[in-house]
Length: 358
Ligand SMILES: *Cc1c(COP(=O)(O)O)cnc(C)c1O
Image (cartoon, rainbow, N blue to C red):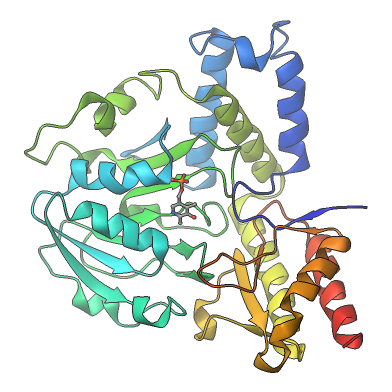
């Protein structure tokens, strides 16, 4: 039976990426060697790194004055690396979920942190409104998490504030156009919407660096990695290769605007079914905050006892990874760039059939 991959992360990648990476594992760039065993200093791998960085800049329309670096350590390492490099005295943080909360907690070790809004008391079921007005004029940056993977909320527009933005875009990078010029830094784990696990991407404005007074350990200093072209130490070669193939695929598909169109269509379909179907309801309370990438829903109150049964039925029909995160419960369908529309259609069919049978 065909499987429909709704995992939240690591998650679905284009078949193109998987096929090309598998080929390179057997014979990388005609070298007769495997991608798993070649030196990152070889000219063939250098070409992979160069093209991946160039395509990243092209597809996200990154203006001059920014660098793209590929690192290890995950988005979680960025929670401390960002303030290490950018926070002298004061920064503002918006608390919209588990990851945002973790980022904010880490920053407190480096300076004053002003929380400009939080929906924690309501289990992060919406994005706080009017937070822009709470950003202190002397904050060095405002940190946001554009898509809250666990709770299914998303800031779909770059906020208008007077200070530079820093964003965790782990789970919605390349899903919609971004005005990069508003940001000092964008980071994320690549395993949600770009590449196999092991790779972290950072887009950083070079002017924003070198302004803090503290000593920064070499490996945690963005300038180290910029200067070395993301090859200061051994990069996660296979994941960088996977990212390159996904970026090539993205370009072929029409780039970020084409992805956004498709993502809106997929998400609208599924939200419409959640709202229509008497068995289910969405968990996000503010409709405009509903994520296009992670769609969270639960059984309606009077059908709560059917949760396990639905999960079993959906699984038997080829749905994979739709169990919700333990802090929300219910179900979560992740609809990243690589998820075909037919998978959304298949899930909707399963929901309809289950409704008819109950
Ligand atoms: C998954 C995720 C993280 C954590 O990423 P790691 O690479 O595992 O550290 C952080 N932020 C967001 C928004 C995520 O979705």
